[in-house]
Length: 73
Image (tube, rainbow, N blue to C red):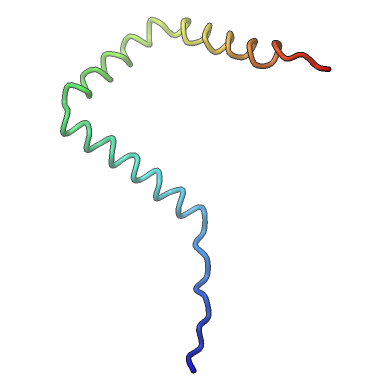
């Protein structure tokens, strides 16, 4: 009879890092396959310099909606 001991479980840290590497590789491949997407992302990042206040207002609105809109019973 053979000894069947289970292998030690993998660390969640390794799986999380592999997930980030996979996402990064996917983004890189998509940018190489669709170069216009890369140009769009660059343009969007450039425009965010001027529209940062719009993102700030959206975040502030979401904060008020979720935290001050609750009714405690």
